[in-house]
Image (cartoon, rainbow, N blue to C red; front, side, top):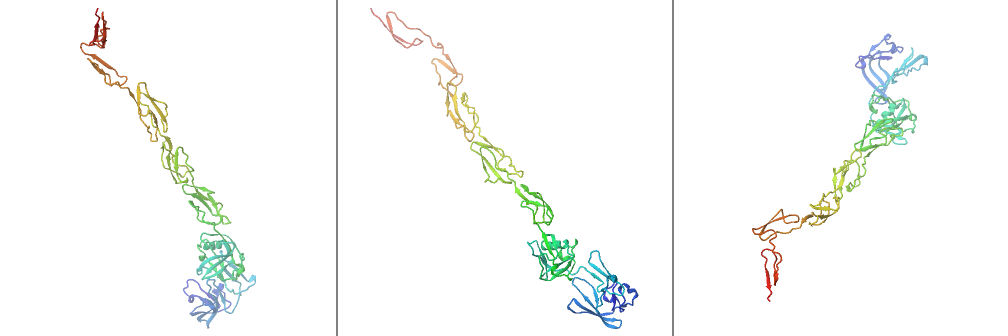
Length: 471
């Protein structure tokens, strides 16, 4: 079989055409004698692997029963056909050309007349998914860098640096740790040569690939361990501080993050930070709790256990003899101030001066001692020395009492008063008939030739005893 041509639509190998003339080429197949295939069997032999070997096709084509070609059925779907007789196209430069597809994954060999190409078209397509269990970075200076080794079916192997780029490194780093990204990659076994298999000869990761095992690849080529690829993964870690928030989505090289703090906390450091090449954020930003500081008040006791930060409650109690003016307890607010701090005002006992009395001071607050005195003719009832107490009362309530003359009675007359019988009140006396106010005064009793022995008075009703002289 010299040429086999399969054109769409086709459902099986039987739908392809072939020619037996060795000088007939696929680009000129319209001038050749082509025959339909009548295939009854296909086998791969002498390849050492069920997927690799010499392809034998059984059927009726021309005059021979079997035609042999060599086919390598590679896991990476790199396809090509070579004639069994070993004919190769190794033309001088003027006898052929090679063209490549835009993405570089398809190479087409165009031989000039009288030359055959070994593999006219070599194409890399999405083959079987890589069964990658893990990725490790070996022999680097830390966990973020080293020789790339991937584990497939329980065996670690390396990746060749052929056509390797930063997109490939990015996908490897993300498979290594989903928070990582790629900072650099190195070709030429930067961190030493590996010793296991080379699992990937060429890797083609792009924007449409979301995971390393989805990337197109070549697994066979001409690579050796001197071309093992290395990567430096970048991961600055989650910069979100305790009691804070960030808009972080990636923590890789050059990523910019804005930090904000929860209520009651303030930013210490820069609010906008960037992931740097040294795997550190540009600033170690933290959120610090707001501190309201000590409560300053007079004549009061503050119970706070020396904690004055946001959300803390303080109980303010006034000293003895003082009362709070404002709300208690108080709270440390997010703006760094205390809610309204009560003041402690001294107790006021009020004016203790009794009626018709006076005090020796105008001060009437807690702890003041006052002396009470009464007007002339009045007596103090109670303690004249009193003190303003912590509960706002005086130690005693003295009053000024008037002197009491008692009831007035007059013989042969009637008494009426303007009030009671205390100092300052008046009484009116009305004499009975035959009596005058104060009584009739007979004057001094004298007698000639005798003497008055005694008398009871010179008023009406008084009596006297006399003696007469005898000659």
